[in-house]
Structure formats: structure tokens, C-alpha cells
Length: 329
Image (cartoon, rainbow, N blue to C red; front, side):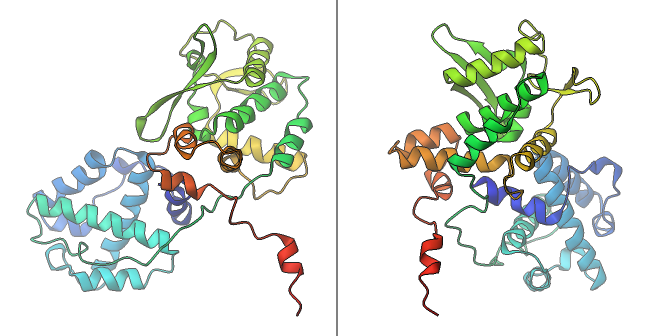
């Protein structure tokens, strides 16, 4: 799936990973007996391994169960009409409604398996029609990327670090979460070339060659930070002390990197709506524009389906200002 689609519902729901063990089991589940309680814990803690998915799905189910309780329903009596009415009343984007429906289907499947309910009331409910031909992530132009690089002062380890981080985002098309997970041992020499090993979504591990200029940027950062011979388990990109601008032992998180990119964009006078994911869009579009086969670009992006890669392709879907200026009204 397209990254912009999978992340959008989480943004709409405004959730962070939830510490579910500190939250009480919903009342309707508790009232339904031991099998329902087991199914709840199996659903939240057993079947949902991704913390962001777990947070989003659990919040969706808690809201639906709250709705059921407000209309006097118990778990075995929930019907497709209840599910449909609940979805109709949600003032959310279609993508977020589809997330809620997916959560309900998944949850009630677990209840059916544990013989709490006979049938899944969400299975026959159709979601809102959602046809996506282009991802929502804004694209940053090649000219803007070059302007951003030129604006970064490399007189300090902070500038060298930030240039290396943004360089990896641009020249590998990696997601910012994967860049934040990099360890010192993930940047290594194969003899004929240097590579970066990323841990991507779903636990996938991918090795991507490092081009020569990016290799030099990473080495300049490592040398300035005294990390050429650091332990392999140490984070590749570290936070800095604000006053001294010296590196700490703490890794930069994806949030740290996203905020850094935003700061660098503002300093370069570039639109604030751009994000780390914008580099991924531009890199994919640029390679496709040069005639690189879709399969090769798909492999670089780490997409399981070529249709996902096409969502990043902005070549044919741009509406230029020249077109709108020609409107004769």
C-alpha cells in the first residue's frame, strides 16, 4: 500500500502508540464473559504486532464499543445495521472510515473464532468508495532539493549530520522511520562499494548501495563525530547537546529527523508543507522520468505491488500554472 494511505488514518485519528496494558478492558467485552476477554487480549496484543496499527485499531474499536453501549447493545446483538449506522455518523475522511471498518472486521473475526458471537456483523458492510490515483504526499522539486543542500552549513557536526540524513532520504528513497533505525553497523563496505542496510515496514530488511557523494557525506559526519570505529550496535545518527552542539549517545528518532527536516526547509525558504516523505516522491518520479524500469524503481522503494509505486509517479498528473492561466473567464 502507498505510505500516504497507511499513515493518513493515523494522522486523522491523532494517535500515538497506545500502552494498552494500562487501559481497562471495554465494559461490553468484560460483560460478555471470559471468552470475550480472551478474544480482546488476543486481538490487541496477539494479532496486532505493529504498534501504530495496534493503537489505531484499538482506538477505533473502543469508540465503536462506546457507541454500542450508548444505544443499548451487547456484543452478541451487534448487527450489520449497527456497524453501518456507526460509520455513517463518523465525520472522517473515507480512508479513516475504511480503517475503522477494517478494525471492526478484524475484531469481530476474533470474537467469532472464540465463539463469543455467531457471525461477524462487519463482514457484509461495504466501506466508502475510495479510489486513489495519486498519493497525498507533496512533492519537492529537484531545484528545491538542491537549494536545500546548498543552505546547510557543514562547518559543524550538526550540519554534517543533517546533510547525511537528508542525503539518505533523497538517494535511497528510504522512509524516515527506516533511517532513524540505522545503526553504525548498517553502513558497511562490501569491498567494491558501501551499502546501507535498512529495517523497513513489516520487519523487512533491505540492502541499498550508497552512491559516492553520499558515502563521502556519511564519512565526513562520522569523522567529525569521532564515530568511524564505533560499535556496530550504536546509533548511526545521534542527537546533539543544544549548547555545545556535540553528539550525545542517544539516537535520533523519526520525529527528531522530521523536525530537523522542517527546520532546514524553513531556513532554506521552502514550503513548510513539505516533509521527509516528499523526498521519496521526488526520487521515484525522477527515476521514472529518466526511463528507469518500473520494476527497478519498485525494488528501490521496497514496494510489494507496482501499483503502489505508480501512486508516487507525478509525471502525468501535474496541472501547470500555464493551463489555469489560459482560462478565458
